[in-house]
Image 1: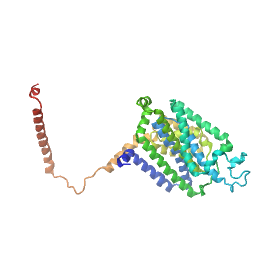
Image 2: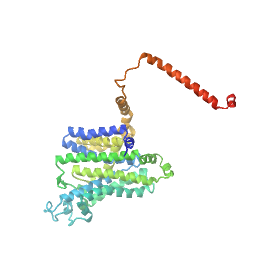
Image 3: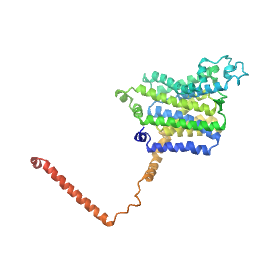
Length: 414
């Protein structure tokens, strides 16, 4: 990729936002927070994956999905299945009636590992499932909805119903999924204990790295021709369709991308927190994920990260004192965002702080006169306008002569 294409994809303003975010996540927070708080920040960042995907789907594509918890759960449960199988070796489960299977299967009187669990013995298959499974589910939903031109509020309600269906399915199939308790007691990843402080540090930086990979992919999409088409589809879908583009395919693509981002966040959530539960899949967490995006700014991928961090920090702080009132506070926050600052924190930054930052950048990057260059003398300054005026008069006379010789004589008289 050439320098000009990189410069067009990452302008100075966007690059400054990436650098500041990287300094906060990579330098400031690890140096100032203890491991417990840093692990909480890592947990918050897993929701930022979902918020970044929603910026592409909702902010640019106009696709409001209230079921992103489905994809978050698919990635989280895929990783949890691998970790659970590793923790359920015959030596560790020898006290069970059927050694070698997860404990919740033994409690529900299953005598062998279900067939669809077998491939998750492989870590490579698990990683592939985290990427491909949300793509397949997103493609099926997209084809069923967008090919029939279902959108707007109807699509939002359908995705919300899908989140509720998946939650009911997970709770109902307790012997296969762990039920309402989810998958707990996840211990090791290839023999590496994921519960130690060193592991939490490692997973935090892995989460930050993957988040910046997703941010770079989202930046590439929004700065490419596809990003411009998404904005055009959001504003004038019929005009884009009449121009010869298949709108449904673009919607399916960006919906699948948002699902993949959410699944990666779910997998990192399982690694950092050590469990996966159906409470992270349903309607309420899916709506909270939309609020993360709205608070940060549904047109800013960097703002989505800040929105996820700020809202989750507020949730942790507020729920410690008033746990029953948090849902009301979340609803009030969403109403305030819609009515007071619809473009979120990114909109407030662009309105108030961005002009001052731009002025400082221009002042910092302004070209200075080299110290070796001596200032012009007063006589030179005084004679310069005279020379310029003389040259302009000579040029005007020459141009008038050329024009008069080039035009016919009759045209002059006319």
